[in-house]
Image (tube, rainbow, N blue to C red; front, side, top):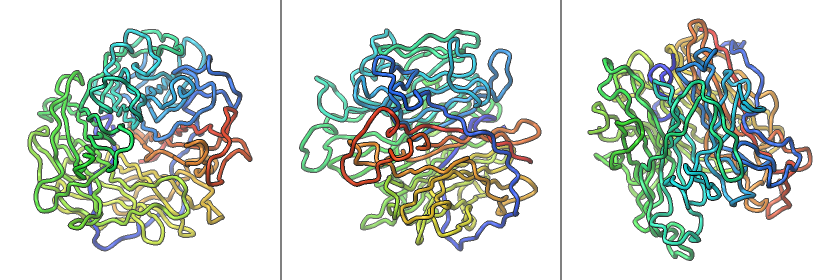
Length: 560
């Protein structure tokens, strides 16, 4: 099973070393079987279905969605098998016609990612949203701690060992129009109990329907920002605290293996407006996400620590050891780098940061959407001291690198360039996971572009410790996307801004014979020909396709 499904160690983030770089050896024929590209988001196929038909379950006006996350449940649906239940989420803008902002969706497939929506009673898949959005009048919505916040995003989905679904995100006010609000933003975790056999309920414009086999259990606040973020005309940007870019992981180890079994962990960045610091903070739940400990800073200890950090990720080893990785920013005393901290006692105490690798992280030249650099971490599902990190770094163009530690993150071997680099195009946004000892990696890739505008964006995949190859050798690259898409369409800011989210994700499991890998990504393939706005400045927007940014997924079957 995967380090997320077997023990629920998931993807992404720890560390990297900047010693000598190695280009990964490869074979000349891929071994990953690629399934069809499947749309996750239920839109109206570029026909304007109208605002009245737009609900948490139906994107009737063909709006944007980006920044996807994915997880495989360790439980089976009634009449199905383990591996059939897949969850995903994204920044989803389908409800903009009702309240003007994105909200947190929940996408579920019950046939291993083949289907994500359909007609009632929705036997194969369902789209809905976390309760509490601005127009939500249901009891769950009115009583949600998210009620009266404008929008929600930064999704992370995970399952616990019993198959309960957790959805982490942030919620926020973009302006100061909500009276008497004590906060402008929060980090939260919503929980859906696994209740196999329960029926779905329909969504309306003012209620989020319940998916089949799951029952909404509530939303817990992990941390709160402070009034000041949304106050207009601040001379120094926001004056308060903005909590951002959370990540979540669950310790799925049995109690005999981990003293922290069942714990839900959340890390995030605490941006402190006038103070200028933005450390990584960490919180733990010991009661299934009902409440969380007071967040504590974990990124500033020792000489290697820094107060300007972002993009944390969590991995949990098979003995319960917690690894958190993140990137730092260049200041008068620091260089941009990947750092890692570690806890062996359920997050009570942390090591000083390990400065793993210096990185170069500018905006990717020739790409209109932002291209942030984060670190991503995964641990081996048997040996708790084997840890992998992936990241992107720029040297003429962006490439994807991976590094391995065999001593629990104390030291790191030379980083390996994961991608080949035909044409010196950018490769960005890696995502990694381990199943049955194999390290799986996927990323965005511009290699099929033929112009300086980087007009062809794809997803590619490789693995190591698979198909007869062992670290540091990777197998041949596999193209995941069946068609390239133009990522630079300006769909936001009244047609003046391109935005593709900040990450993609994969999850993986071992089925006894093969590795099953699910990859999710943002894709503009559904924008009709001639409707992608590439001209700087505001442009025309419509509901018949020029904002139809979708989430797609593919299932890969990978040999041992």
